[in-house]
Image 1: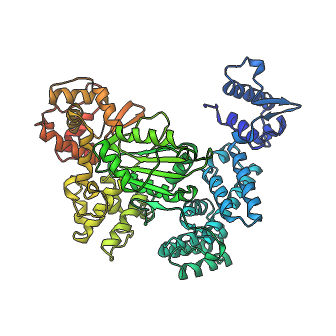
Image 2 (image 1 turned 180 degrees about the horizontal axis):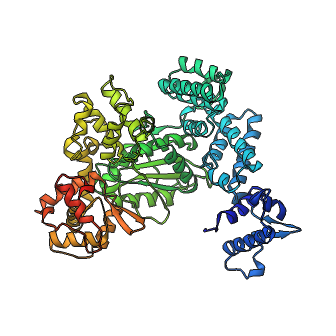
Image 3 (image 1 turned 60 degrees about the vertical axis):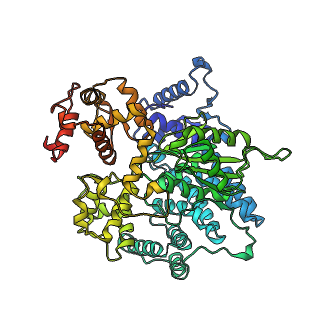
Length: 620
């Protein structure tokens, strides 16, 4: 809901922090203005309340809008049930976890705390802090969240569940940079998941920060974590505690390597999986949908008694192929066996349907049978095109952050996720490679030319086995042709960037391919009028270009952006390179399009011509 200006939102925030309790008008005014309230402070508070009531209960007569925010003597009260307020849900779960933990029931406590932490999306409490700066309730709530997170991470580390708690440990460490207990747990979680080098690097970073900014030496928490990082290189589960083996995993995976720059995505996906039975990860070629989906399944695995089943659909083209792919991973029940009971809300199996874009209809039919037939099944789908189902929750996966030309600080460039991924993969094929202040700008430029796409970045880094870095940077004009190292061990279309991009063509009918080919004559960001002009100029057909563009958006070949110039379309460099190849098949010549502003008055065509001529777009 659109709740109005910040101070109006702050009123609701304070009422929510004290849900069910009377909050005096004076207290609300003090929270909004502190020691310097305006003379009309009380009247403004009443106005904010009236406006909030109108937003929250729009269909009620003005004087009867008291069901959500009721008036009390000298104040107001927010009336919500425990399950309606995420903070109360969080507190209920942590209290239940503490209760079962007193009975030495570590497993249910771990599951309850996991649910509580997945409901916590913002470790910084940034929105709340912005609304109520310096309010004492914020500090208390932050400590409450940290304590619950630490207990969850502790249980995960002690009872062999370090991998699912690692994202929480890293979020805590990011939010509490000077909290030694938090940082120590993060070091331990990294070590227990086999990331010894990362654990030791984190320890060194924390020690340097404490010395430089607080002038203190690391304490006992970090010392213990350091000794463990030296001694432990893989996750170990103590047998004496009687914790059962982890639920099974069937099919490809799980992910062994840790993801780079996907902490927020993983947290958001875990939250979606708590609320919806079907979640689809969508996005352009090579953006990392598969890796993220497998990481999500690994993080959520302990919440499913039957574990995880990963179905690889990259080779499927028909209903029979989909059925065969499902059969290859073992039985996946489409209905609950007759006579069996499956308690409502109890989770039995997480099914991951990977690379479903070429069998969208068949996958939708399978998902429908799974979810309607067995209430204990959740489904995660990865596809360049969404399934379009009524109960589908969609998470668009974006490219990694690459910064822009304005970022020139070497240290800032080295912190970019895309640059970190390149450096990690480069070190695998060329052990002598090190990301430094002298080469950070060149690596960042390569990553920008590759749009921050993880697959493209990993394949480009693999080229360093034979090519020096500066040579690689000169080959990025046509990434589909320049980046073709052999890559095995995954789906065939991940073997090269060229193969991955060309898979997208199988999603398009002839009209869509012609429209897509025409877009090689426009700039990377263009308007509808420019698309109409080049389609008419190159193919001689105008048709319903808006509809065709929307289909290309649905199939992750274009992205819609809104801004001061209205609705515009954006195409990644890899997609433009593919469009150029397709245009040659149709005999299109982008140079035949006139140079100059399009009929909408912008320079979509002019900039595109400059790119084709080998000039920077700005030089047009």
